[in-house]
Image 1 (cartoon, one colour):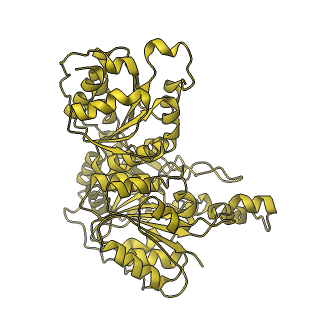
Image 2: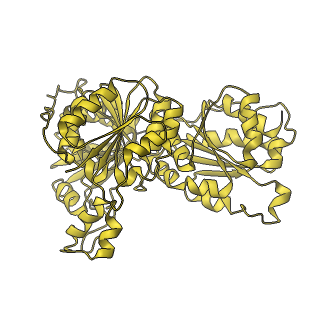
Image 3: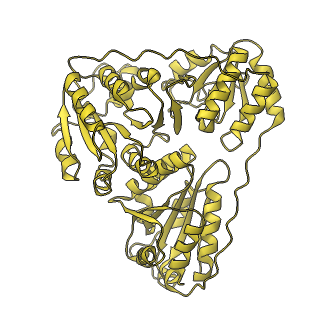
Amino acid sequence: MNGAQSLVAAALREGIEVCFANPGTTELPLVLALDEVPGIRSILCLHENVATGAADGYGRMLAKPAMCLLHLGPGLANGLTNLHNARRAGTPLLNVIGEHATWHVEADPLLASNIEALAHTFSAFTKRSTDAQSMAVNLADAVHATGTGGGGIATLIVPHDCQMAEAGDVLPARRQVPKGGYSPANVSVSAKALQRGKSAILLGGKGLSEAGLRLAGRIAAATGADLLCDTFFARMERGGDLPTATRLPYFPDQALALTRRYESIVLAGTRRPVAFFGYPGLPSYLTSEEQTVTLATGAEDVLGALEALAAELSAPNDMPRQSRAPLPAMPKGGLNAQSVAAVISRLQPENGIVMDEALTVGMAYFDSSQGASRFSHLMLTGGAIGQGPGAATGAAIACPGRKVINFESDGCGAYSVQAFWTQARENLDVVTIIGSNRSYNILNVEFERAGVKAVGPIARSMTGLDHPYLDWVRIGEGFGVPSVAVSSAEDFARELENALAQKGPRLIEAIMS
């Protein structure tokens, strides 16, 4: 085998099943190897940020890495936004980056760049292969690294000549990723904290899985603690008979008003919460050091720690049955954040997946969907917008039997419209809902909160998505996705019901009043 073939063969042995790719000349031996060593499903993306976003969505749903095949440093740079988001989500993800031939790099060709410097900003593991014989071993090391420390990103750089040279036929043996541990001392401290005064458990990571929520629900029943969740979680299982949690508010003054109610806040699968931005007169951290107790970080065995905590507290084996919150009434008339959220919450299918990147348009959705049937809820994790379309694409590849709803704002969605083409090409079961308020409305909200009574024409132009409007029907149809626009709750409900009843991608622009 040549180096490229050995890399693909090693990837197959390591359990890689999908490759999201936007390759170039330096990756052509790898493209050929995907035919010559069959077994990996290869999916072309029109932009690298779609490929990395798709790998993120795939990894969140299956807790295993997909491979991203990207073209040199500029291709990696194009995908960096969603690699940043994936790092914040703790997603296992494998990047394979083509590089110039080793003998050509010193000539400083036009596409040459410092790939390692880019990769180190988000990677837990970075390695450059220096010969064909090392590529399979380096690939195995990279995949192993994606599973350590609770999940992470590995980046492997493979020069063109190393891909083509003879590598031999020996592949490394597959290694098991050791299971993380937890601190028994932290369990004891957490138990004591939950038994004194008013307390809460702040859940993130695997604490928001079905198993984590049920354990947390048992602990809450034993102690009277409230359940909270991160503002922007990677994945949360919700609905049905699962325990509900209060989402930490986005704005720091509102979050502080919530956290200051508690004498103790126990962290399970997350870190001490930090304000999204720094505001004058408000602290960076949303809990005090005195009230914050860490049970287990996202890199530790969160479920094991919760199980041990439940045992120490003699928590009931069965969680008390909770009454489901009522769904909002089906709205009528013009569309706003509340009515759009109500329609989605009422119509979303059981066992669906909702990728939520709707920002101000979606602020009502979390509470509105508390009474929904069971579903998986994914969110923007790193604050770098443009995650939704790619992540929804990857989630649909990972879970082909489940309907995916991508709830987007128009500003966020405009970053990654190329994902629609991949959805059409692969006939993916994704319904994209664009909440169209025709502005970067979160900035308008920030102006209001800062006490700005009126903005000038330049500031107004920097937040408006008008002159011209984005024509989402033409955008969707231009990439091969059947699309409609609606401006009333009745029309939105009808079109969403129709889209959910069909297979394949659909787009609905919900125009706000």
